[in-house]
Length: 283
Image (cartoon, rainbow, N blue to C red; front, side, top):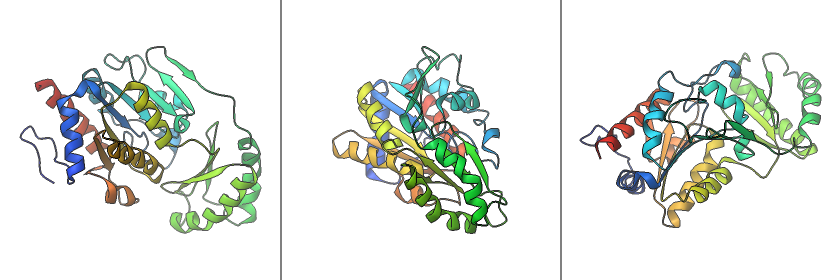
């Protein structure tokens, strides 16, 4: 991976180079969208302790006024991502949007409020069944259930063998989800049970149309980001340049294989945001 004269990394694909060039040529028509956990924040054993990288807010605040829009697209509740990110009341982020629960919720910095539909059916039933379900499988020890409002997630990172526990749970949790009208979303040692119909690709495509984006950068790290990657690839086929950035890790390789640019985790993402802000400031 090379660098531009202004130290911006060079995407490894022609489509990625075209996407970056379009963003630089017409930044006020560009959408910059980012996942939260693993992209703006390091993955930690307890998701409630996740916080944005210390330099993330400053980098976003430097970049946001120079592009059409910056959006955080996350499986977390929108309000939680705002708190853990420290996004509220920040100069430069007056028009930041957080699309939470895969786009089912939306927080706008300009109003400081969250828009959300009614709670979905099925999540409460699955949540109530999970403790006994995990115990019956002999997989209760070391797993951890995370309440997510419109979803519920089972984490295996604390288990003695996180990968083996994850693999053992994948099929049974899919069956449990189906009984409650839900689907499963696998991630980095986590399986989320949530309603169908929304994913990061749907959310990203709708928001790109809303803001009239003429180029799109999307950065993510996990399997749940693959629909957003597919959305950018669809936009490309429709003539909208795009840049796919992977917040690289040893735990997930699928995104790195499809990305135009791989950076070193949240540190690398924040560095890239800062480099973009500096490059656009120079004109």
